[in-house]
Length: 307
Image 1 (cartoon, rainbow, N blue to C red):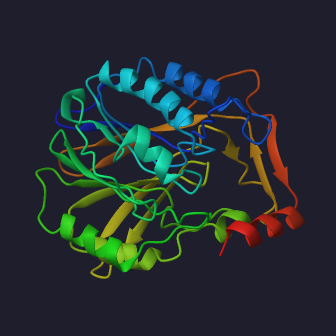
Image 2: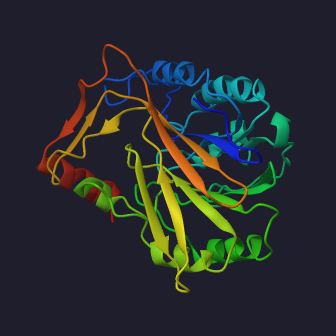
């Protein structure tokens, strides 16, 4: 792959790793630890990486062991490239385990140096998020998860904090990382588990220096834009899942995913221009069915975890 342009920030965007603490297969079919190792191997020769992002559903079971396995893989990988590393919770994550191992989720900063976390105890009801700087860009993580639910939402307080964070522009713009994307869902199940107040999020971004929103949740690569009230358009880039890949060609009422792992390579130029390149693993098992929920099963899952 070509090296990034001068002053561009190259981001490796991962999402939905769904690691387990005891090696349990995701959906009974996928070894997610092996899947993560495979995609990291696939990305080994990508030049000029300046930031690694994981946009939620880092863990399947919320166990400290799962977050430790993720940290022990990603920190050396990013540090070897002198890259920053930030992670944000998704609906499968549990804030207690996440905080115990990953702190605020901002582990490495500019040049791959470790970020020191405070040791203040925070209740599980408090969302996890932080701000750091990488190559002149402000990296903001925003927790859209709702404990014990699959859908996402941002409180008025969280939106006020976001506005305050973004009030003054940074040197080369801001990148916002969250789990639930403010884009139309690809299936009935994801529609029940989508961000509930995307318009409020977009309004909070109006007039800010945010050049890109990086998200996950849909287990498939998507690229879209949101239009702010003043007419600005902000790109939203959804990474493919590490755990599996949603079959968007299937029935909307059902949910089907295939064995596949992927990532996005996102280049953010100094003027805010973007390039996004999907990368996929190549394994013998890729393309096999990983999970298939009937319409009735989707309705039952949506009733338990959706809104």
